[in-house]
Length: 358
Image (cartoon, rainbow, N blue to C red; front, side, top):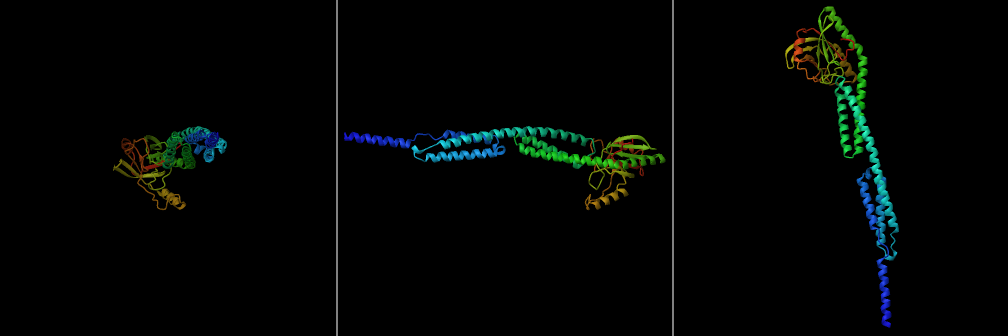
């Protein structure tokens, strides 16, 4: 009997120990893994960029829940309580899902706005290109337009890769460049409005002198890309012209590739020019020299700039674009025709725009 009592007591003790160390609650490992998986999904959806506060909160909750679970695992089984860890991990799961959804919604909003802005900017780009094509070439303005186009191309590539913030930066750069284009063209138009009366006077004087002497004269209209041959004040022939590749303004200095504007005369005929045949005009004249000195004094141009020279009407034209260093280019056939009538001393008047004649 005594042996039976001892065995029974030992069995009770062993059962108690098994109960004590086995515990009565499992750790929320699945909840931890679910929260971690939700974090990974949020990160891949862009939450670190578009929902960082929610993402960091969820990340902190996952760590806190994991530490609480580890803490409970270290206690004796009867004393383990995973309720707090389970609650924290459930909150972490919710926060991670919220971060993911916020990122998705934010990206959709940014994507819609970016595509709308991109479409609008492409429209502006086309409008300014049309305006530039309808005017003389201004090298700096055209360069700004090209850089705007490159920024829009970059924005499209960034958007295709889901990098919307970077795409918007490129679009902002493009928009600012197009504003510069618009400002430059507006300034150019204002300059034309101020100068048009001067150009009218030059054309009128040239025609009057031609009529008075019943002589030949040449008038170049830069905007129209035309060279007119007149005699006795009347138009007798029109030639298509190509100009300097930066001819939207008056020539300021040597190397600026602008075709000068003023009243000149032919000072030399050259039948062996590198551009077939050529008529050299007397640029710079006294008005050019005065303007050059004034611009240096005002700081418009560098003190090291030179006024330049050797402006011609020459051949090798017909390229359908402005390409010279400041000269007026005709086709070789047209140069042959022009030089039948023009010689040393013939007036050559170059205006940016002639709105009255011919």
